[in-house]
Amino acid sequence: MGDKILMKGNEAVAEAAIRAGCRHYYAYPITPQSELIEYMARQMPLAGGTFLQAESEVAAINMVLGAAACGMRVMTSSSSPGISLKQEGISYIAACRLPAVIVNVQRGGPGLGNIAPMQADYFQATRGGGHGDYYTPVLSPSSVQEFADMAPLAFEIAEEYRTPVVIFADGMLGQMMEPVVFPDSYAPQKDPSAWALGCKREGEFCNHIINSLFIDPAVLDQKTRELFAEYDRIRQNEIRYERYNLDEQPSILVVSTGTAARVVKSAVDALAEEGIKVGLLRPITLWPFPYQAVAEAARGVKKVLTVELNMGQMEQDVRLALAGSCETAFVGKAGGLVFTPEELTEIIRGYAS
Amino acid sequence: MRIVAKRTRGLTSARLTYCPGCLHGVAHRLIGESMEELGIIERAIGIAPVGCAVFAYNFFSCDMIQVPHGRAPAVATGLRRSRPDCVVFTYQGDGDLAAIGMAETVHAANRNENITVFFINNAVYGMTGGQMAPTTLAGMKATTAPYGRDVEDTGGPTRMCELLATLEMPWFITRVSLLSPKDILKAKKAVKKAFKNNLDKKGFQFVEMISTCPTNWGMDPLRAREWAKQEMLPVFPPGVYKDRGAEQEDAS
Image (cartoon, rainbow over all chains, first blue to last red; front, side, top):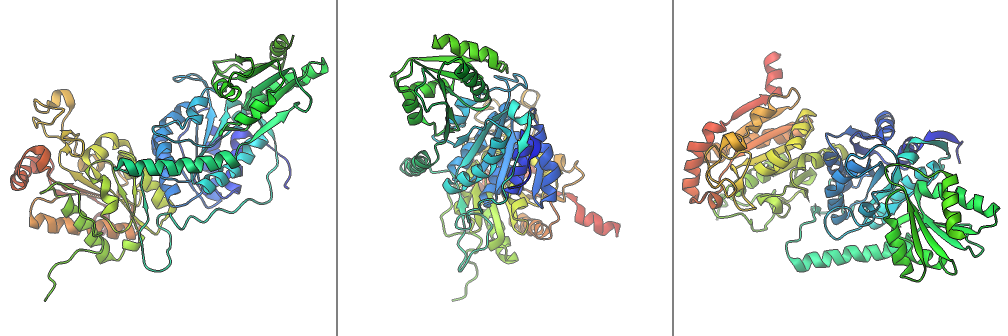
């Protein structure tokens, strides 16, 4: 392991991506992810890779489509309104079964919203986002270290299942500085030569075609079923979550992710000192969502609270997980406001009494 | 028996899905022949657009990808920067290239991306059934301009070669016609020159081909060709609009 380096989340994830072998990056400037595109502009040429500032997010994701079709480790990043623009391309990348990594450093919405951290793109991220029947794995970090570690993880998942993967960060994680340690080695890229365009081929030339048009409904049905068989495999293998303060039976279970979960942890610790047992289940993969883990953690609790930086989106997944077996409540803030540990402690204490 | 003509290796044996009398087949053949003659079938990557040529991935025998409407030059950018030794080409219609894909076209040209863009201009949206395109002529009828195109309301026919030629960076911009055998021979030369320039990594090559759409124009193929000669060529004059290679030769 290397030394600890103090870095912004936006820079750490960029550095981690380059170290993990990403050599193609296309993006368009938007706050609060600008440090990411600027870091790539500086460092990608030094690593011998391709950096290009595209004319739009639409163009950027289609450049990603091109590089992914050639089997390159390719990444793009943006923030909420820009991610909306990329959805057409993400749908094509998913349909064409291509690996790519998309970082969303979320900001306030809807509309132009503001540049403060939110988690309001949850529905978009976890329900495919673009048109058609598809999902993308969604990784949700809650520290700069975890944000950085998700770059290589996202490439590994993207290549194993040939799917776009979304890293679901926010303006807080992108902008704040924390110490980061980068591993000494990374998993090698999976060989794409069986399907990628423009690669050297053994024997007689047989062209490769990448396509998402299946005019015969029976064929499209079959292709979609193949895609969903792969999603089953992702559900079996890739569900990730953290259990915090859940070893002893808590009275309240909080489900929270990303930046919101950090504040929840402080509240859980403060309440533990008061003798109030509160547990946290932090989904790390938002799709696939850890439904079973939430249901198990909720056994015997008085209430399940979902804490989000939005008006209640993941809360719907929590209720799906519980299927009416437990009382639930939602605690959220919109507008880019973030809870202080004190106010969240007080809110949770109110539910515990 | 002597073989006087045969299918080019640049095209597959799949049956074309274009309407009778459509000139896409001619354009495909020119591109296929040029790839074969330059020996680049194994190192070419083609892009099928959204539009009549959406199935082009079935027809060209090189590597192919089908991409979102209008985004071919952006995808081509990702392809060619990943595979600098490949020849990357797009094949786009007027709606794809000059309407929804205008931004991608202009910026790829301005970056002098080392790609070839084949632009088939028949002044109408074909695949969706004859709607107005950016290149639809003034007064010309389309299903979404049923009273004829009113340029005061919907703008005039977009001249892509002239527009792109105002940029400093693109390498080669030309407009050819597919309306007569003589024109087709000229068009072949332009196709080959564009590919050759890409092999030499010269940058952005733009070959506009004036074509017809007998089905949506409501004409038989011969009449469509005559109509295009009379009505389209004056608005879209064939010629070389930019040739940085020739400029360099002139300067030296």
